[in-house]
Length: 358
Ligand SMILES: Cc1ncc(COP(=O)(O)O)c(C=O)c1O
Image (cartoon, rainbow, N blue to C red; front, side, top):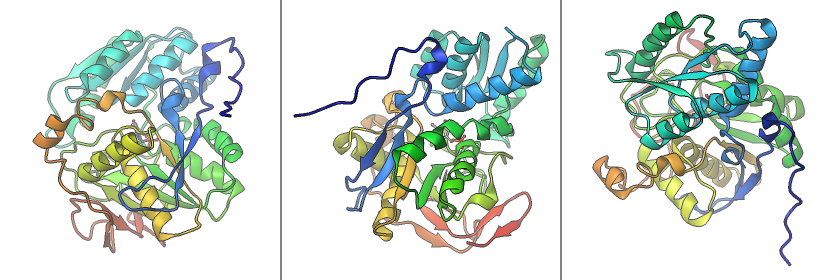
């Protein structure tokens, strides 16, 4: 007989809904057969993975007196942190203004508005810093016009990193061990926070970073990017370069193929970052039989119905081409410009040129 666990008890406060996401075992071919990996399915926690960071950043700012009760929170976001801040703002009593750009999915913009956030839309990318820099420029204008407004600054705020201690605590109770942790990297928050906390339990744990082609984070040149959530056109200081053992850059063709395979056969799926980490986690589990590989699926599929899961969108962007099953190896992060799935076992902080032995 099929049994399901008893539901969680009634929570007296919105914050009680945060976290406690399930872990799924994924062993469907992606695209090759592999031993399987564990994925923490963060879209089954309200607001997705980044709600943890949002709550942590606002709470810490409240404690330091930087965020006054009832004051407005302003942030630049490509979506997921916005959802998290909408949740945190309601839970902690703060209006939220989100600076987004034209590329943000309509469904996500509608959702943010429905949850009560005010949305400011940027129409043109910055000529050098892309959408991210354009959003930051607008953010400063908004901050200047709202008295007492607080900017969490997710890219450089250490509370974004410590916010993932709950995720680490949950994982330690949910999986037997973690030999390899595979994390997407955008602000660097969850990879840094999880690596720090999980290595207290499993000191030999390897950390694999997953970025997108065209992102500067690990030393590649900035290029226009289709994949959002992971990747950046700036150098977020929350990225803990010394914590990584290797980095993979994944392209949109591989991410689309993986998200669709996951949706068809594993039911749990998600967006660009989910496709990218699942591809890499499956490959590692194939290459290292017996290794306990764990990854985080940051969000769910719904906001990607008009992109990743839309045939016309994918055909227009050439995303239905055969996706490589293995990465190309490169010796240094800037050895060549990568345009498809690639792997490098030397991790460098591009701003410090600090070599970290693999
Ligand atoms: C959907 C999604 N995946 C992955 C990431 C990367 O996570 P982090 O910012 O903790 O590096 C983000 C960050 O915004 C995201 O929105």
